Image 1: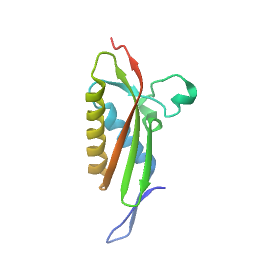
Image 2 (image 1 turned 90 degrees about the horizontal axis):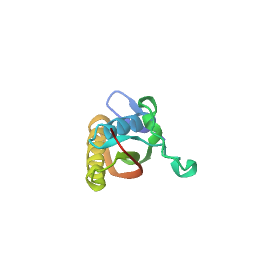
Image 3 (image 1 turned 60 degrees about the vertical axis):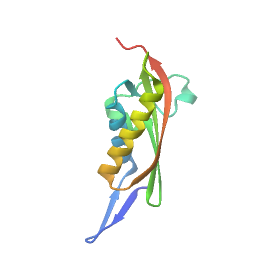
Length: 119
C-alpha cells in the first residue's frame, strides 16, 4: 500500500519503494555503517552487503493510516558501539523520512545482520 495525501488540487501518491530508498540512503549516511543487508538474510544465512542501487531491499516499510513503520537491516563495522550506531540510524531515518514525506514515522526498527572488519 502506498502513502496517499489529499491536497487542495488533488491527490499525491508516494510509492513504498520511494520511502524505502529514502530510509536506505539515510541509514547508510550514518557513521559506522558498512552497508545495507537484505531482509531475507535469515533464509540465506549470509549477510551480503547490498549495492547503492538496491538499498530499498534492505528496508521494510509498513504504512498504516497516517503513520509509517520502518525496519532497516544493516551491517556494521567491527569495533564500534552497536547501540550508538542503532540510535543514530533510528534518529536519522526518522528525520529524513518525516522531512521528505511529510508524515509521522511511528518507529524505526534496526536489525544488525552482520559485523565486518573495515580496512
